[in-house]
Amino acid sequence: GDSVTQMEGPVTLSEEAFLTINCTYTATGYPSLFWYVQYPGEGLQLLLKATKADDKGSNKGFEATYRKETTSFHLEKGSVQVSDSAVYFCALSERGYSTLTFGKGTMLLVSP
Amino acid sequence: NAGVTQTPKFQVLKTGQSMTLQCAQDMNHNSMYWYRQDPGMGLRLIYYSASEGTTDKGEVPNGYNVSRLNKREFSLRLESAAPSQTSVYFCASNHPLAGGVDSTDTQYFGPGTRLTVL
Image 1 (cartoon, each protein chain N blue to C red):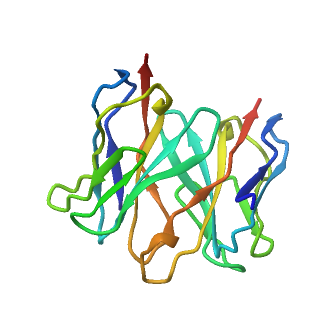
Image 2 (cartoon, chains in turn green, red):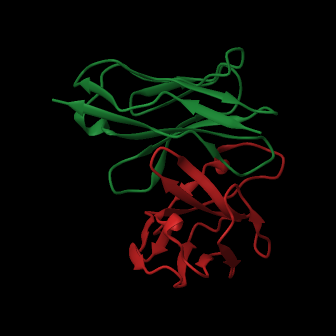
């Protein structure tokens, strides 16, 4: 079955540091890939997505590129802020299906 | 436009008690979902409803039932709560096109219900 593997956290960074959160996936078909973010005490929000190979999703300074050859969708940001502290979830959805398969989440803690 | 709403926000039950978690969306979405979130486990799908009148099991359906009351509402019922059902429950909705992928397949999440079973 489908699965998503994320690096374990917490990831602790100082403000303005570079962020990478690794995500790899296993899928039987040709999935869409997503990054969701969960701020403390809230539900999940879509951060960015990519629907085909080599697509780059971007939002709020975050980027991720759909790499079919390495089955990866790593999340990056050039300069993190304290307000980016949250839990980040990588997820996939097989084409033609509406359900999401999530990774276990990676907590990011950014200190001033 | 409230998006996805869930009630209650918090609930404490004793083992064996029953309760229903309510979810409603005002985005005219066809599909709705129930997930549970546990530490170190990510989100796991309990049940989903691809369209009004249909429901299907997800990854962890045991101990739960669902009802798609109408297009807006999708409830989750615990008939006899167990401590293993202590979790945060999220409802989500979207409007996927059958066989296709576009911006409408993004799932929109509610704020969650934190349930403790003693």
